[in-house]
Amino acid sequence: MRTTPSPGWPLAIPEVVILRLPLYVRVLTQLQEEDVEIVSSRDLGERLAVTPAQIRKDLSYFGRFGKQGRGYNVGYLVSALREVLGLDREWITAVVGVGRLGRAIIAYPGFSPEGFKVVAAFDADPDMVGTDVGGVAVKSINDMAEVILREGINIVIVAVPAVYAQHVVDTLVRCGIKAILNYAPIAPRVPQNVRVRNIDPVLSLQTMTYHLKSVLAREAP
Amino acid sequence: MRTTPSPGWPLAIPEVVILRLPLYVRVLTQLQEEDVEIVSSRDLGERLAVTPAQIRKDLSYFGRFGKQGRGYNVGYLVSALREVLGLDREWITAVVGVGRLGRAIIAYPGFSPEGFKVVAAFDADPDMVGTDVGGVAVKSINDMAEVILREGINIVIVAVPAVYAQHVVDTLVRCGIKAILNYAPIAPRVPQNVRVRNIDPVLSLQTMTYHLKSVLAREAP
DNA sequence: TAATGTGAAAACCTTCACAGCT
DNA sequence: AGCTGTGAAGGTTTTCACATTA
Image (cartoon, rainbow over all chains, first blue to last red; front, top):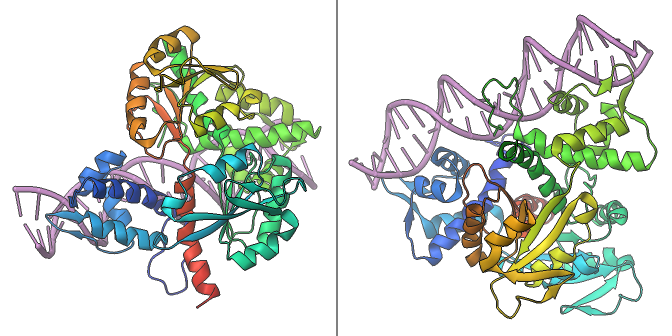
């Protein structure tokens, strides 16, 4: 899949490239913390198990960040990529569903250092509404449209049981939400202009068992 | 990437195909519960936002499961795919790290119905060792090799802080583990014959912000 | 010398389109 | 008539290889 090229835009950027950029950002950030100033595509490639050519090609979609014969300045490259990805600002998120999973997500300490702030939580259970979960006030799912607008929420994290997930996603789409991180074990249907990323550990496990099968067969024939 | 073709094996199966099979299994299982007996590649494609041709091609790597003019028998197809993926058996797993995340994973009710049993947990903290987390006994990380062997653990779920993750993964590889589900926000380096799947909500969010940027720019220019 | 940036080639994956079966 | 299974075509992504520059 490619990002739709605007008419007259010089270059369509493959979606796979976008998917790799955050990996580059992460390693570069780590290098920055190690006070490494210059890095080559080869160094980066080794750390990420990616070919140097792929890294250079990926970066070339967005500009010329390196110096021939030298490599890339870590600080410069990481800030350029952060800007490309839109990571140079804060993103306002909300969590729908405050069951076990929703609570764990709200408590997850990895979001806020990366600029993702959870400002609201929603639940359908009236007993939950009005309570406080990890410093976030739980609101009724009926007030979602209003709160999303008022708080300027950009991204919504869905953590409701599978049977309700599609309905919640439909509601979010009607609210104008364009990015959804879905933890429910379904692949929700959304219009093309809405992005969904699914987090589904069971699917991940199920893609590994295929390979494990042959490993085990080889071990104990 | 393609799965390495054994010498003389007729057909190498693209890795992307393997990644889609669990999706098919999930929808087919749902259809089965709805007592649907026959399904066409078109029906399936609509439910999954995938082209019918792709579904037929994917399935064709593993056999001929359909009837021309009719479609696929849901029960037959789902059990065939389960067998292909190795889902017709139980897989023994362990969790490393019983902090907040590790506990949430152990408590997650979605694994066991799909045949993934968590039989052990490991932690480096001596105060944790010997305690019980969600019905699973916490063992010392030093005993990992022994327990993995004794319990016949196939898959290990890593939920330790980022700084320890590579070390834990290295240890697991030495223990002969060939499949790792990694929740730590790093991309661990492993030998080619070991499979890793990373669960990293921040990376997922960061790939969506790229697209959001242009959405917002369009809304408020 | 050492490494980038990039057209061109190669590899890979998806879609087409239709023969063939029910 | 309807749908599968599949070679072949088409499109996309990766890799190659080298001109170019510090």
